[in-house]
Image (cartoon, rainbow, N blue to C red):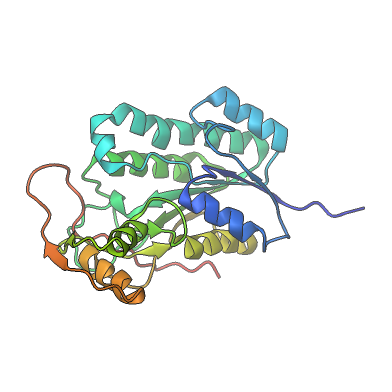
Length: 265
């Protein structure tokens, strides 16, 4: 009789992290995997959510689905809250009913950026825009209502080979010979989707205490410094101008690098 492989259900499977998890899953045959994109599984629909869990009975659910457009969230806060809070509650309810462990992704944007050293798990969130506020509320839902739940915060996430992100945007413009202007007064910790995917799998394997964890790149860089690094990596020489964030408009944390005081070992 074959041993049951733990089943991991991944939401938002066509996003950049979801796609990296699909690639990583090919190397992780200790698990069974089910990848669902928005068309196959709309987490905003509680009936659909319940049906997916009845069908697959997952041991783990990795929720990579989120409303992440910071600018549009200001214009449509209800939609941002629906995806980042209400839908998360649907997942929590389904996970609790099926004894499923939820791994929920969150963001450095839950912080206000007022401090000058990396934020750790014990630092108090103080979001300054709609996106950050909805993600902070979603976090709290998982931490207080999920029977088996992890919140994993990450920052400045990018895949080098797919998806729409800063890394690929800078690379594309530079390869086209465009000159670049990039802000030098927002600082964070760029994180690859590969690093985050491997971290999520380690959580599943090692089962550390439920709660909040940070996973981010070790480097603390401004967007301008990150762009400079991308150009150097690909030996591209195009004009790169340092600019400042314009006054007014949507607030973004000026310093949102993430550190950690917790180990999953």
